[in-house]
Length: 56
Image 1: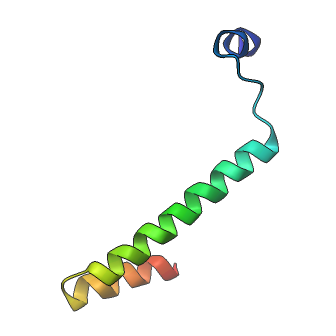
Image 2: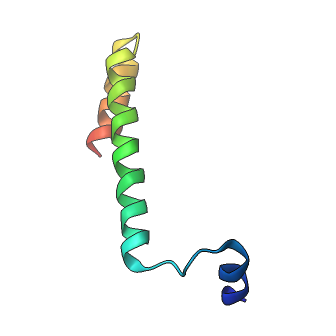
């Protein structure tokens, strides 16, 4: 089934490198979004909660 999907989409099989790069990009995006939310938060409680999530 996998080869059929690869043929139809024109994409090759996912390699470990592609999966790892996708995970890294998603993680970096999440950190950036949390950091922006911390700087734009309106109340100290929300800022503290977002900072805690960012550190975790």
